[in-house]
Image 1 (cartoon, rainbow, N blue to C red):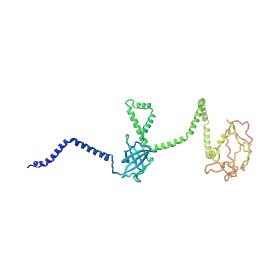
Image 2: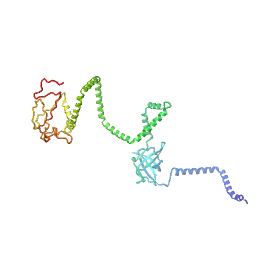
Image 3: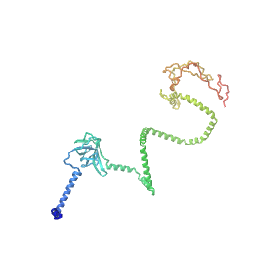
Image 4: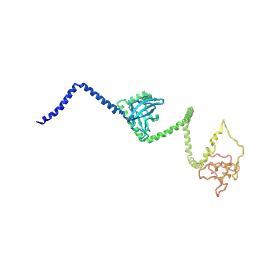
Amino acid sequence: MSPSERTRPLLAVPARVVVGAARLGSRHRSLLSCLALLLTLVVGTVYLVFGALGVDPTAATMTVRVHLAQSGGLLAGQNVTLRGVPIGRVESVELTPTGLVATAAIDATVRVPADGGVRVASLSLAGEQYLDFRPAGDNGPYLTDGAEIEVERTSTPVPLWQTLAQLDTTLAQVDPARLAAIVEELGVSAHGPGKLADIIDGGIFLVSTLDSVLPQTVGLLRDSRTVLTTAAAAAPGLGEFAGDAARLMSGVEAKTGGFVDLLGAAPGTLAALDAVMAQNSPAVVDLIGNLGTVADMANSRVPALREFFFPTERAGSTLGNLTAAFHDGGLWGLVNLYPRYSCDYNLPRHPPARPDFPEPYIYTHCANEDPSVLIRGARNAPRPPGARVPGAPPPGQAADTQAIPTPLGPWSIPLTFAGPELPTPVPR
C-alpha cells in the first residue's frame, strides 16, 4: 500500500466534518449572521466601556470638590487629569451662591499632592474641556476623600465671547481706509510680494537685534519708567510752565516789530563793537590778565560770596532783600534808632574829608571774639579749609601797615592834599 493510500482514511474524517459544518451553516446562515453580529456588538461594547472609557466597577474612588469662578465649558462626565494623565471623571458641575463647584471622582490609588493649582483646560479650539490638577511638587500632603480646592487656586480659560469682544474692540480701532491703503501699496505691481518679504526680513532683523541687546533694552525701559513717573509727578508744574510760556510768546509776538528793528540795527552795532575791540585789543589783553588775578582772588572768597547772596545761616537772601525793598511804587526801608555795639580797631583815624584818599589799613580786626556781639566781619565769613583767619598782624609787621599805594598811570588824576588843580584837563 502506498503512503497516499495510508493517509487518505486519516484526512477523510476531518474533511467530512468541515463539509458537514459548511452545509449546516449554509442552511442556517441567517441565524449565524445574527449570532456573529451580536458577538461583535458585545466585544465592541466591552472594549469601549472598559478599554476606551476606562470604566472599572471594582475601582475605589475618592471625591474632591473644586470651587470655580466660572465653568469655562466644563461639563459632567469629562476627564480629570494629573498633569495631563487621566485619573478620574467629573461627576457633576453645580451652581453655588459664590460660583460653581465641580465634583471630581478620582482613582483612590493615585496620590495627588494637595498643593498647586487646578485649571480647566481644552484639548482643542473645539472644546473638549477637562479638569487638570497641576501640583507644585510630588511630596505630600495628598488629597483625601472629601477634600475641597479653593477658588483662589483655580483658573479657567478665557471664554469665547470675551475673546470675540476683545477682538471686536481691536478691529474697531483699525481704520479700514488705512488698511486698504496698506494692502494696496503692498500689492502694487509685481514688486508687491518682494516689498512684503523685505518688510518681514527687516522685522526679523529688528527682533534679532533687540534680542542681542535685551539687558540694555530692559534697563532703558526701567529708566524710562522712572523718567515718565517723574514727568507725571511734575505734570502740574509743566502745565503752569506751558501757560506762562504761552503768555510769554504772546508778548513776544506783540513785540515782533521791535525785534525786527533790533535785528536791523544789529549789524551796525556789531560793526562798531568790532571796531572798538580792534582799537583796544592791547588794552583788552592787559584787562584779561587783570581779570585773571581778580578771578583768583574771588575764587578763594566764593564761600563768603555765596553766604552773602544765598545765606544758609539766616533767613532770606541779599538779592531777595534788595528786590523786596521796591514795592507799591516806592523804595522802603527800616531805620533802627537803638544803639548797636561797635568795635574800635585801635588804629589812627583819618578825617573822612581828606581828598587824597589814604590807603586802608591791612590788619584791621575786632579784638572782641564774642560771637553774640560781633557776627559780622571778615573773621566770620566762610572760607576754604586751611585759609588764614584775619586777625592780629603776623610777627614783624606793624599793626598800622597800610595797603600798597595805587599805581599812577598816564590817565590818572592827581589827588593832592588840597585837591586837584582846577581846572583839571580831562585825559585824552
